[in-house]
Structure formats: C-alpha cells, structure tokens
Image (cartoon, rainbow over all chains, first blue to last red; front, side, top):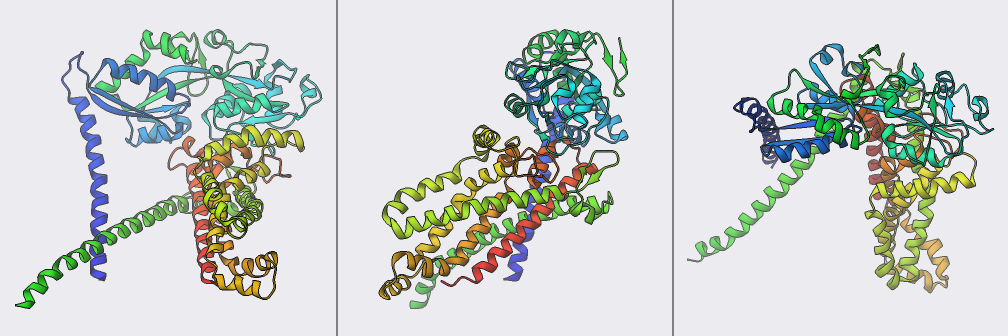
Length: 305
Length: 300
C-alpha cells in the first residue's frame, strides 16, 4: 500500500512538472514564431503578453484589440496586476511587455533595469482634489507638504473654513503616489494615523466626494463634478498646462521590453505611437499623447525643453 | 466446473475496486501535492524576509511602524495583526448570537417553515461575492457611521459589521445542523421532567451542542480572517493601530492586496508582504487545530 502511494505521488509530480515544461515550450514557440516569421509587412504574426500597471491597462487593452483586428495572425493578451508585477515579469521573461507608471529604475535593481528598453506611450497628469464643500481652491507646494505630512490638520490654516482635513492617500507602494510625492510634494510622506489609503481611483474619488474635509489626488481623466480640483501654485491642472510644462505633476506611462522587441511586439509599439492611436484612443481615454509634450523628463526628474 | 465461473464473476468487482482505489488515491495525492507546494512556496518567500533581508522576526511581529519602502525601512506588522484579530473577533461577536438564535428558531420553534424557506435564504448570503459586500459597506454602512458617530465612518467597526454578515451563513448552518442532530430523547426527557421549551433550549440543547456551535464560530472567524476585498474597501488601510473603532485601520489581508501588485518580486517590500501571508497561513492552521480539538470534545 505504501509503495502504491509513493508511485502515485511520483506520478502526480511528474504530471505537474510536465505541465510546467509544456507551458515554457509554448512560450518559446510563440516568441520564436514571431521573430522567425518572414519579413513581410502585411503578415505580422506572433503572440505576446503585456502585464502591469492598471492605470495603463485600459489603453493597452483597447489598442491591442484594434491591432488584432487589422493583424489577424497576432494575438495579444493584456493583464493588469500593478507596475511592480509588470516590471518583474518582463524582466524575468514571463511577459513580453511590462506596463508601468514609474521608471524601471525606481522599482528594480539597477542591473535588471538596464536590460529593459523604455517605450513612453502616454503621459498622465495628476491633480490634488478636495471635497466640493472645501472652500480652498489653490494650494502651494509647501501647503500640500504640510497637509500630507500632518503638520497642518485643519483647513483654516491654509485659508479655508474651520474643518478637520481628512487625507485620502494611495498605498506607499503605488506608482500614482510615487508620482504625486515626487513632483507635487518634492519629498516622501509617511502614512499618517487616521489617513485613508485606497488603491483604486474610483474609490478615492468616491471617498473624497463624500467625506467632509477630504483631500486626495487623481489622474486628470478621473476628474468630474463630484470632487473639486485645486490649483497647484496657482496653475490649473489641465492637459495644455501639462503639455507646455507649466504644471509639473505628471508622469510617463511606460511599456518596457527586455532588450529590443521582436517584430510583432515592435509593430504593436509602433502602432501605439502612431498618430492614429495617439490622437485617437490616447486622448479619448483621458491620457495625454506622448508626442504632444513640449518638455521631456528623465528618471531623475530633470526637465528639458 | 464451478470455479472458473466464480472467477469470471469476481473479476469485474476486483477491477472496480482497483479503479476506485487508484482514482481516489490520485485525487488525494493531487490535493496533498498542491497543499504542500503552496505551504512551501509561501514559507520560502515569507522566510526570505528574515534570512535574506535580515529583518528581525520580533521587529516584524511587534513593530508599530510599517514603511517597507521608506528610508530607512520599517517592518512593524503589529497594526495589521491587531486589525485582523479585532475585525474578525468583533465580527464573530456580532454574528454568533444572531446565528445561534436563527438556528434555534429554524430547528426548535418553526422547523417546517425554517428549514424549508429560511435556511436557503441565509445560505444565499454565502453566495454573494465579497466585492458586493464591500461596495454595500462603502455606500451604506460607511456614510451611516460617518453621520452617527464621530470620525470618518471607515474603520474596524465598518469592517467588522460587513464581515459579520459574511460569516453569518457559516455560523447559522453549522449551528442548525448541530441542533438538528441532537437525539430526540434528550429533549423529550427534559419535557417529561416538566421543563418548558425555553428551559429545555437553555439548559439542555445549547450546552450539549456547545462544541459544535463553537466550531461554527471558529470557522466564521477563520473566514473573516482571510477575507480581503470587502474589508479593504471599508477599513481605510492606514498602517496604524487606531484610537477608535471609527478610525482608519488595516488588516493583514488588506495590506497584502493593496501592495502586492505594486512591488517587484524579490524586493524586500515584496518579501515582507509574503511574511504577512505566512502569518495568515499559520493563523489558519491554528484555527483548523482549534476546530479539530472542538470536534473531539463533541458530546453528541
């Protein structure tokens, strides 16, 4: 009986391992197929996987469907899972494209990040938002720092009514929060006692809109009348001000590949950066086209015209 | 002449026996492999926080500050452990009396109507997806608490209330089964001695079924302990021990779901989350052992 049990266990293990091996093989076949296919413009084939940032996922998803419609032999899978997951998977070769809200250098080790090639496909602007009943409509950088570090806890200290400030933040690992801290606050902030943290923009918007005295931050595409957008240093948060560089709180949406992409992936990324997509889907979904930016920014935050 | 005939008859039985044996064995082997792989995977990831990143175990279990990506990083998970225990135990405190009373009503007071109509309705609660609970909590319970109590409405109280509804079917179903399995003679004996219905329920039925009722509670707590999504939506997720029931707090599961996707595999922040997962897993084992122990004490 014991012997039979052992045999069964070994058999199961073999089946499981074999299944794993099979997967790898499939993955290899797919990428080989893509790179070995004859260089024929009308017939691009291959299948690849794009994982990562949930902020970028709607755009990639929509564009990939259009791309697959015009290239029948290409199959693209898009998965959300967070910037960290996307960067890890592309770096380890589990997916072909890693979508990220932040530069790879900010999440991965330097040598791993160096192996990745950055494709900046869009820009996302972010704005501080407050509950509609808050009377403040402009906040300086210093005032934001004071609020998010807990130095100021009442709206009357920044020119509003006598009301407690309720912070609605993102988790400390979030790409959105990293962007906001880096370009709006200029420093890291800690999770304060009593602050709320939510990962999804929808929940943040709902909580800021409903909670008296709440402040949070959202991507420009999420702004509507349920929350009040405040100016940053007197500059209004809108697409034009982001594009011409007067409004500093924005970030690139990255699509990373490991090394240079193969033919199918490259065709997809080229399509992503084409005028058709940039002026169509990108704008439609509330992102800012990468080619519209009059300023450029590198990983250290240095801005060039 | 008779022997070959007998053998022919016996053969299909033996074959059946073997097919059944092998098939069930295959299933159990698959289950065991899965369980051990998961335990191994979580433990290897969770322990690397201590062995590779050299975080002190005591710091993780008793530290009050959680900032794994800060400079310098802090790995205090006590606020999460506190949040997990307080929400799930509070949920059980709310749900247990409700579940007991519902079970008593369904079995002792209105057996026909209760088991036929009420039980399916209560079991329906178990089938509602947790995100729905979370959204209802965020849209109904949080604004209600915000208006009635001081604070922002989110927090342990809102989390516990949402969880208590989620674990109600577990507690009620197990309690109902236990009450129904009670031998008739016990109750009849009690009635024969002149006890009223309430005296019988209070003095005979509840004490005898207590271990089974406790099993229901522990399973409910275990479910509440592992629930992530619904709690995450209403608890606020600040990594601090709250000063009141209506202040933003955090649980082990909400901390994991909030940050797992945003951290890179193998980074210390990611490993620390796996350590939280390992704590969760160990707690689940503890709950399972408590349930086994309670079942062993069963008086029925």
